[in-house]
Every structure is written in structure tokens, then in C-alpha cells.
Length: 285
Ligand code: AMP
Image 1 (cartoon, protein in one colour):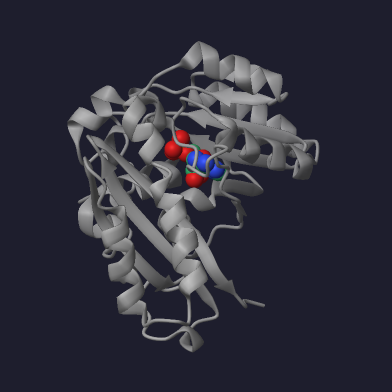
Image 2 (cartoon, helix red, strand yellow; image 1 turned 180 degrees about the vertical axis):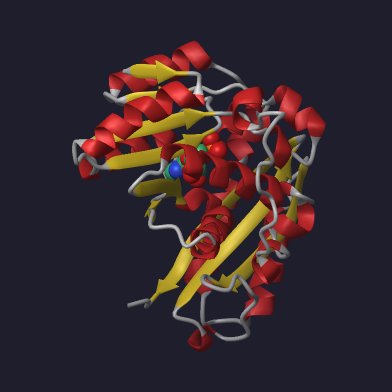
């Protein structure tokens, strides 16, 4: 695996790869890698000649500076994991490489309602920071295919809109959510859960499944309120449980109105914020 810290060195290498007609797949991450991240790498490796993984804890997308400080950083373990799945390129830039002081990094995108609901309503500035870094990384890597997880469904929807706004030719590939055995969606933040809250955290995926079973038997509002009540375990504080149109991310009133329906949830477990989602219906295409 080649490891690059400098944009210029990475670009020199990728230009050669591109010139030789090889396809480049890209999976941006913030490190503390787990099997969810590796599933993105594996999918990229199956569909491209050269897979680039970036590890960059992007300061501009953290609305909570304490969360940024506490974000797990496990670079040598991450490097070994990426080696184990034969990743071709690891990009490990510093903040100065991504945001050079002599260069304005574009941050003038408008995602309208997509960025105002759910995560956007609870994490001010998060999606602006996320879009800024994804756009900058895409300018640097210029991949044919971009791999992102359904785990962050709203993020992926916003990146799809970013690609549209920038007339990008990069193809976005959504990878399924990888879960622990009990159903908890894998996340770099899970290691910070207390043992008791780790056990209880299965309530997110269980609630999504319970609501899916009850779909059509109660109104959307009733299902959402059932879910919020179900999530209120001791030390757990649900922020939202919303059943939305998977394209516009706006609330739906009845199931027939949308071809793609997704339920999204965010819940605090002690001082760790967890998110999860489930596709309830997909009749797109
Ligand atoms: P992060 O390091 O949290 O920024 O995540 C980097 C990428 O990995 C994003 O596209 C996430 O959606 C994806 N990802 C994170 N957790 C999972 C998971 N459990 N299953 C699949 N993809 C994931």
C-alpha cells in the first residue's frame, strides 16, 4: 500500500494511474476503521483498479469541539486493516494540506431543505463542513467511483446533490450498513459507549425493525411517536425518529406518496450520539 501525506505526491501517482486507463475508486473516512469502512474498500476493489482510502478527521464538520477532541485516532491499526484488504493507496493529509492558508477552499454550496432536516436541525454547520471537505477531497482524488455508506443516509443524499451542483462525473455508490451481531450499526464512536449503554444501544436497530413491522397499521405520526417512546431507556435521549421520502428527505404523510421511504434515527446514549436508518420501501427505477 502506498501512503501519501502530500496532495502533490498523491496527485502525481493518480495521474499516472489515470493515464494508464485504470479506474480509481475512493472511500473518504475519518479513521478508527471498522468492518463498515472495510466493506466500502472491498466494494471499491471489486469495481476499480486502484482504491484510495483517505483518513482525515475534518475539523470543519464538528459542531461540538469536545467531540472533535475525543474522536478516536488509531492510525497504525487503521493502516494494518487497510493493508489486510489490499488497499492500493492511503491518503493521510494534515489539516494544512486539506485547507492550505494560501488557497480558498470552496464552501458556498446550498443544499436547501436537504440540509435543514434531521442531522441538519441538530448539528449546526455539520453538513457545510462535510460538503467542504468531500468537495476538496474529490478535487484532489478525482475518482471514477465514490463509495459511501448508507449508515449516513442524509450525508450521502447531500453528497449526491454536491456532485450534481459541481457537474461532477464521479459516480456515487451507496454501500449497505454493516452491523454488529446484535444489530447495532458499526460506528467509530461505539468504542466510547459504556458497557451498559453498549448493550442497550441495540434499541436503535430494534426500534427501526419494530416500526417496519407495524408499517401500514398506524399513521406515520403514530409510528414516529411509538419509536420515540421506545428509545427512551435510562440514560438514552432520542433526538428524532423520522420516516421520510428518501430523495427529498422531507416528512411523508402516507406510504403511497413516495417510491423510496427511509426511517432515520438519532439518539444519545450517555454522551455518545448514535445514528441509524433503515430503508422501508424502495420502488425507484
Ligand atoms: P466516517 O469515518 O464515520 O466518516 O465514515 C466513512 C464512511 O464509512 C462513510 O461513507 C460512512 O457512511 C461509512 N460507514 C460508517 N459506518 C458504516 C457502517 N456501519 N456500514 C457501512 N458503512 C459505514
